[in-house]
Length: 147
Image (cartoon, rainbow, N blue to C red; front, top):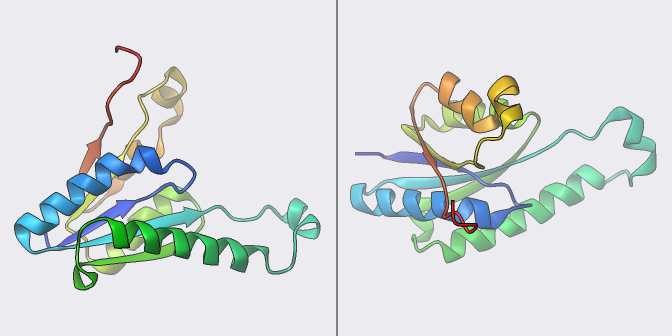
């Protein structure tokens, strides 16, 4: 059913991404598809550039790639059916560009519980849902505070 599944991963909150990864892996196994993990690094603001090492972006990319490699290794898919990449820029824009680049037929992503500010400004998940050219499944984890 789904052959190319894209899963955005926020490496600052990997617990949030776990339900989406588990769901995507399950769907990929059921359909013989592949999972592509993507992490989006923010652009280093110009005003901070003089305060960070010259290879700061390269260091961040390497660290992110290593973390995604660990997640991919532990997700339960064989190497032929899981891959990863790191992009840099705006989150929802880069997720949509990656989906286009791999011809994804499904994006599975986690989302925080909506807050009042996201109803007015929109969240990354909301932007992806609105503008993706493929199906999008937004997965929410278990609520721990009884809600």
